[in-house]
Each structure stands twice: as structure tokens, then as C-alpha cells.
Length: 101
Image (cartoon, rainbow, N blue to C red; front, side, top):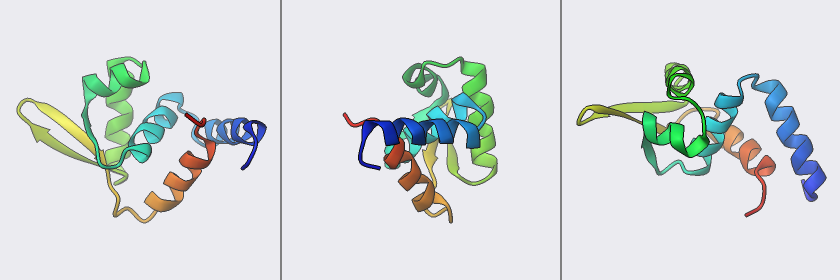
């Protein structure tokens, strides 16, 4: 994808493949920064979504193995599972559709 139009089209496809807007935002965050671990409230602020919707989608993504979860001092931290069989493919899709900074 070379042009802005291709990136926009790619984001539109992602939104249809992944019907949850929150899930798309979470995948974009975690797959763009796989070395980072985030707690729920922090993630909610970063992506601009409610705590409850972020909590629900993080649990879903952890349940299918795309994220690791780890309790640390009263908070649960989530991080991308770089060993997941779809990690590289999903990361490639996210990077191809992410706006250039």
C-alpha cells in the first residue's frame, strides 16, 4: 500500500473484518508496540474508549492467546503475545493500514 487512499481502504477493510471498533484500536496499539505492557485504565485512556469496553475486549484477545495478561500489584497488565501463530500476519496488516506519523 503506497498511497493514503490505499491506507484508508485498508483501515476500512480492517473495520469490516474486525467488527469491534475497540478491538481494532487495541490490536493497533498492542501490535504496534509489542514490547510494551499496559494496564486496563491506561489502555482505555490511550485509545479513548470506556474502561468496560476495553476490559471486555482485552479479555477476549487474551482468551484467544493474542495477548498475555499478568497481574502486577493490583493491576492486570496486557502485552502482545509475539509467539502467537498470527502475530506476524496481524502486525503486518496493522502496519500496512496505520497512518504514517
